[in-house]
Length: 389
Image (tube, rainbow, N blue to C red; front, top):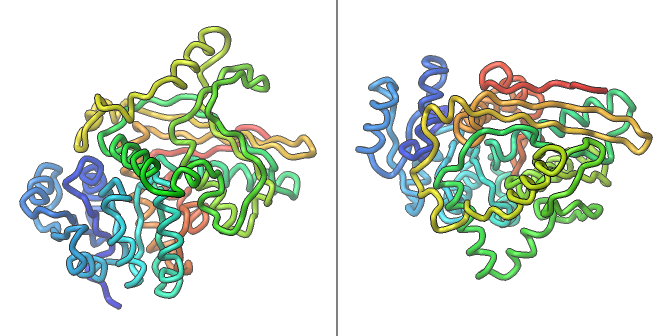
């Protein structure tokens, strides 16, 4: 099938979609056939002009509630890059259409219960059609998925066996959340209260590995003193999705990290009483899902995005006492400046370096792995370094 486009950015007039379109226009002025998609032709044209994209950048009108327009969109492109969330409200038809018609798909989903529903409903169709459906191609969960993968690669090279325990530690992070993130959290909480089984999925660290149930995992919900590091750590808001994606990557790779992997993810707040107080404050903060949080369409300013950053350390440990440490950093605010670059490079990696991968519902680490890591280092301002071991 010959598609008109390489990538359609669906949701290009929204906050994050606009950033993705701006990145593609600036970074790939030639060589990539991409289009901007959304419900309103007028809004798409306005954003195209505001971001300085070429006047002939194609605009594709599509409504996530209109099956015919979804079919027209997915059959015209190699990959749909969608920022239209919450995905549990607006993503069902698009995933179904991509799985049916063999179109690749990338999103920014951090909604594990919905992702499991999509796996159960559409993985067989995606395998049959050749569609590669890849969730969580932003800050949740690429730095964590690929960081654990690199740590395991280093441990296997060092000892011949994978690490049995990996700790993810967010050492530094500067950035704010947008209304889209808040809306996704609210939608997930609403589903947990109204739909049978959703709460159980949210509590299950192996929710995204149907048919496999591994060892007991740290719950990551309470602050504690990490005695090995000498610092207090607090619950990390993205851990409930990142940890599940790491376990899914492991399962999709035939448990390359071992069936007994224990993975924990926390935020470092520092040593002593000050670190303890900050950890307790973070654990008690419920503002993101509150009524006073940001509204959809709202998000950090250009200055906030460009002065943001993150630094995550992964400490991989083996039963024999061997240890490897990997650091992952990003040069923009995690949720938007960096995420917009990560998802764009994910789409390009999927249809280029990973073009021969089989259809199915994948994680970034399982289907793209080192090839995506190389792209992110080259073009998206991330670093991946073995710093110890």
